[in-house]
Image (tube, rainbow, N blue to C red; front, side, top):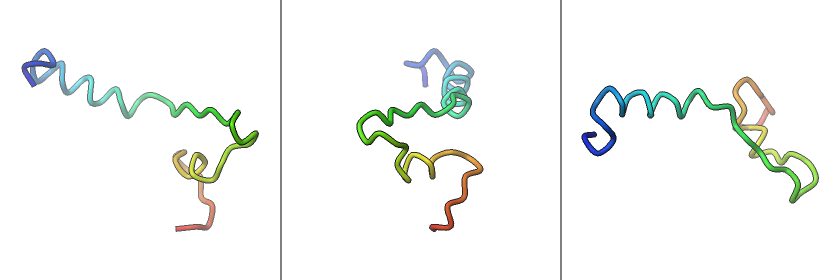
Length: 48
């Protein structure tokens, strides 16, 4: 943790990971694939 600037700085950086919205590049397939959809919070596809 010291390499990240201490416990407080480390905790802030770790928390920031979960605040960033997901970014998808669906240009390869031309549409958003199921795996990308499943990664979005609140999206239920009926597939476990």
